[in-house]
Image (cartoon, rainbow, N blue to C red; front, top):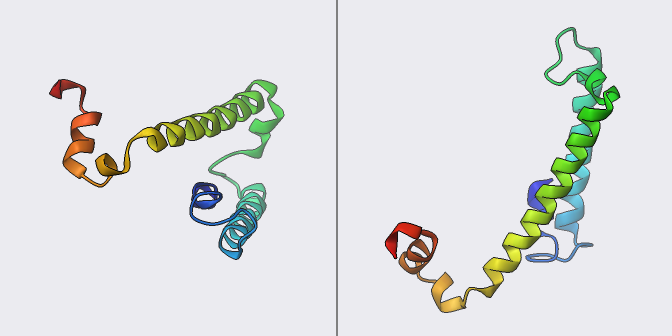
Length: 100
C-alpha cells in the first residue's frame, strides 16, 4: 500500500493499472489479515484494541501525521535542484549537518 501511495501521482497516474492493482492487493491482504486475526487464539494485533477509543484515535492521528510528513518531505525533495540530486556525494553533504 505504501508503494502505491508513493508511486501515485509521481511515477504513475492515480487511476493507472499499477497503482490500482497495488491498492487492490493491499486491501485484499488487509482483509485476509483481519479474517485470520479474528479467528486465531493469540493474534498479533487483537482486534479488541480498536474498541478502545484512545487506541483508535491514536492510530488515526499517526496515519494522518505520517501522510502529512510524507507530502512535506516530497515537497522538500522537489526543491533540491536536479544537478544536486544526481550527485550522491553532494546529497550526502547536504544531509549531513556535521559537514558544515
